[in-house]
Length: 390
Ligand SMILES: O=c1ccn([C@@H]2O[C@H](COP(=O)(O)OP(=O)(O)O[C@H]3OC[C@@H](O)[C@H](O)[C@H]3O)[C@@H](O)[C@H]2O)c(=O)[nH]1
Image 1 (cartoon, rainbow, N blue to C red):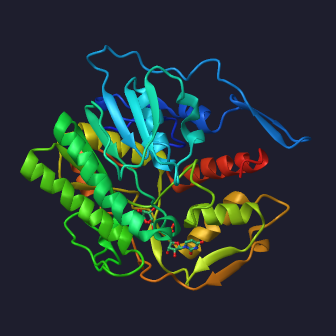
Image 2: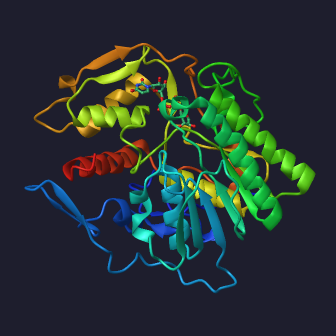
Image 3: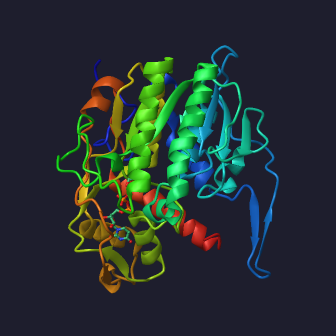
């Protein structure tokens, strides 16, 4: 397969249209932006004098594509009220599909999908995937699982249960309904990698008993389960290994480096670097990830696929980029100091995806550069702060 022409290429200035025609996911960025960075708040009024907020019912929903009933799919998104899930839901809704979201709201929030509540194509169910769930669907995007290190280590046993029992339940559902099943796995399956960049063929270097194991090993067994159901029960499966992702609707308290640095810089606090800051990560913007997930679901490729942006930074350099983005005169980036804290146990020293597979078999590549993606993310955090929502 050859590289499909993405709607916009990186080097040609800011991205304005995203998505891929072959799967009907293309959309103007402005339309999505209205959902998380509205020019005027559509659903609430803030009364700063009395410190109250009034939520209003929305008069009309965002427009969705008119699909023939035969083209419209019924799609289940577990974890659909979370950071990544809600952006996926936005896109699937705009594409004209019917979307059912399952979420236990541990890290997700109703606000992320509030603009769809009441829409005839949309349903939101408070449910924990650890318990079975019955429904008729034709595609399942299985995202449900806390994903930031502080959140997944908060209750490690529950994180393992979510990965194991949650994935068994959703694979069982896929088996019964003959739905196509997409597992969102993670770059953490490579652990602290000895191969760099990481290809999907690399088996990883994971400490099975360390504090990250509940997530790393949880996702590894989730992958094992996925391919066992494929071999044993003919379930049609897809596996995405997601690399570090950022964007609007990240939780300000999830403890990840992007949200921590942005919140610290906006509050004029020191930026906390864990260890010497020489460890690397490669950051992708959430819309690129959503493009990759939708392509993977709809293309005919069942091996694991890395979805990430190979643009690699040391955490120290990344701190400088965020300081420059957030701080406007009269505060200069130098006015926000760096504070060094101990490095977490088993923190991977480097991480960068090899995306040859995604390019070759999906025709996918990231479109957003870090400056455009971070600018929108900072704008979103700033708006939340101005409105007193975080
Ligand atoms: O305030 C901070 C937060 C984090 N960091 C460092 O920044 C790096 C990135 O940390 P993050 O918590 O954002 O993310 P990690 O790469 O550790 O884990 C992530 O990996 C990929 C995804 O599956 C998950 O979202 C998450 O587990 C780490 O080296 C961490 O030690 C800081 O230096 N300061």
